[in-house]
Image 1 (cartoon, rainbow, N blue to C red):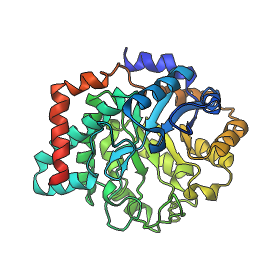
Image 2 (image 1 turned 90 degrees about the vertical axis):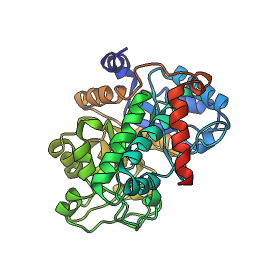
Image 3 (image 1 turned 45 degrees about the vertical axis):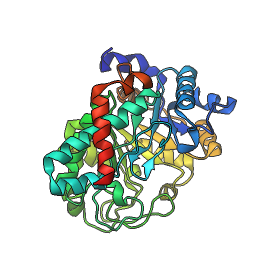
Length: 354
């Protein structure tokens, strides 16, 4: 089935809220939330994983509860990899790919493609549709939360390595999501627990941190903005800023999905309650908002969010549905026999020792 047909089939199913589930199996409350008309996605965490068979049963249960729903995870490699045991390949931190680039450009591009392919193939074999990767932040050596998640300090290197990683994802039938627009690498504070402020001017940010989003162009399927305030540009964090998301849409011509970062993070608290934050993000231009690690707040959001712009909702739903894989994936046992996968896995694993 083509992406277009898949999107058309699932458009009505996908609301603008992505939420999580409590444990390793669905509870009645999980199912109720997933089946809510405003829900369009489910994000998984390490607490949702015991082993591959359990993960596969969980994703099957989620898809059964809400056909067409988008199942996602933060699974980048390095310290941000939710599933690490029972056969999942230990993926390298992206900084290792940047270090390899400095020694051998062609080897680094090949390795980036291999990492993307292994990452996506293993997730898809267990029923996960999307990973929130790649990180496009620049490695200034200052950020407490980005650190070795970033490929490199040079935006040109970040762009090329991300392009190759995205190619690997696509070979396994998975879309991509660049984050954290326009850039989280310059500030030291962690937006999970603080409200980072970047005092630089617009031109400085556009010319460096945001450049990979522009250069990747149509190669980006989705983008997640940063919970960072850039006061010389706008008083609102980027994910709640009509100005920043307008730059992404208008000036950079981005037509894919814009996800908010988690509304329960401290960096989102300046906007107000979770319902106020969701409204602000959607009004600024986000297509989907995330609420994680707080079932009570998820219930508040589903109960309190009212949306009247039917045209925007339909446009966002179509964009979201295009992220749902359009073809079936091989199961785990079949994947292990695949020559391309085995070669890519060997290359990805070799990076840990270089």
